[in-house]
Length: 114
Length: 113
Image (tube, rainbow over all chains, first blue to last red; front, side, top):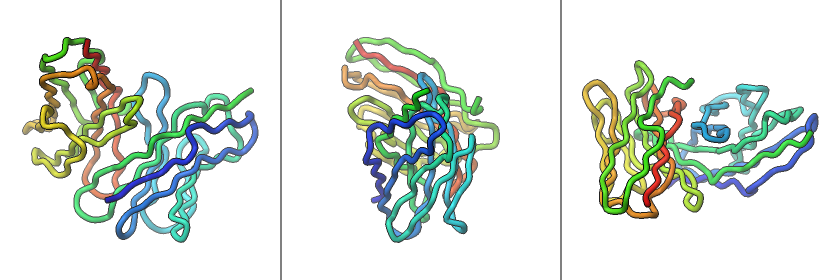
């Protein structure tokens, strides 16, 4: 069965600094990987996905993620954090067989200080 | 706005009762997913439907059931409610299966008292 680990409950970064939110996955075969963001009292919003191809994926709001097959990781990055990036971030994985079942990590709270 | 509509937004009910949560997917989306988000369990996948048929099942309790109707809207039925069922229930939809991103509704916050 597929699974995702987000090892950090919270990441703190100062505005203007680069940010990284970590995600590692476990899946049989090749994964489909996703990042979502959740703002307070809102649903999850899709940021980006990796299906195949280039290991560096660019997404919404200046976010990008790097797929590393040997380390089974899919870390979310942004070169310069904004206070408005403060939110809960979820990594998700699905297997590339059968019908998609998106399994989410436990989430990482990002706090960007002014 | 994701295009996924969930009703009601809030629901307060007593233990032992039954409730129905409703989800209208984005126009054209055939897949509907249900998730439960609680503080202690995180975001748990419950069940997925594709064009009216159940396709994947997660940690869904026997007291819970779901279905997807011919017009593609879906309902999640929760019965014999317990205090621990209090959570945020999300519906998501996607165009098809593998590799397609899911779009989430704003959720239904269920409080069991």
